[in-house]
Amino acid sequence: MTELQDLGIHPKGRGETRADCPHCLADGKQNTLGVNTESGVYHCFRCGWSGKAGDGSSTDGPSVRTLPTKAKQRGGDKVIDIWRRALALSGSPAEAHLLSRNCRLPPADGDLRFLPATDRYPPSMVGLVTDAVTGEPMTLHFTNLPKRDKSRFLTGYQKTGGVIRLWPDDSVTTGLGLAEGVETALSMAHGYTPVWATMDSGNLENFRVLGGIESLVLAEDGDKAGREACRACAERWIAAGVEVHIVPSPDGEDLNDG
Image 1 (cartoon, rainbow, N blue to C red):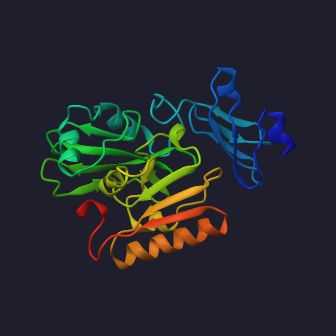
Image 2: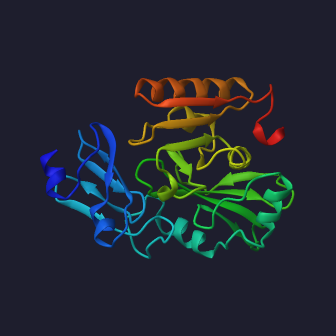
């Protein structure tokens, strides 16, 4: 705890908790720093300042939305290069697709964009998959347009432990909503925000408890895997003292099917 305080970090609790980011405060802004008082690991949800107290390491990098040209990114240069070619949702076929599916559009600084067609692939909606805890880019998730006949991940990159941050970190204050699919999450967003997409039941089931979040809302897919994932996630977060709400779906459907 003393080593964290030496860095200007004053945790608001113990274990997985939060604090005000001293770097952001120096710029006249108050933003959230995720902190683990046991391991000493910290990460700012806005400016990207991160490291581990006591070992002299820190990263003054920007948030994952701005993606530096050269950085130690788990996903590597290919993820960054493709993401930089992607365009904003506004006015794109991806925006039209989401509206046709009754989805709420995410903010412009969320991790969802439109990728024009290439000679190998059709146009697609692309989500940046980042580590749920650290925010490091991991891979990309593509949904083919306009038929939505296939979704895929960037070959050769891991998605385990990742999410698509449809709303940016600085919008996550005391509550968060989770769903497996992007469109399911954006359907839930009509009634609750901010929301992230875990992409599958495994990532939802194993979603780690994040410090400072007091309320978690889970969109439950109407199949065995979806229900079991929500139950396992809910039990772990409830054990950590978090209020959890589950939004159910009919058998064989998800919120976007309703």
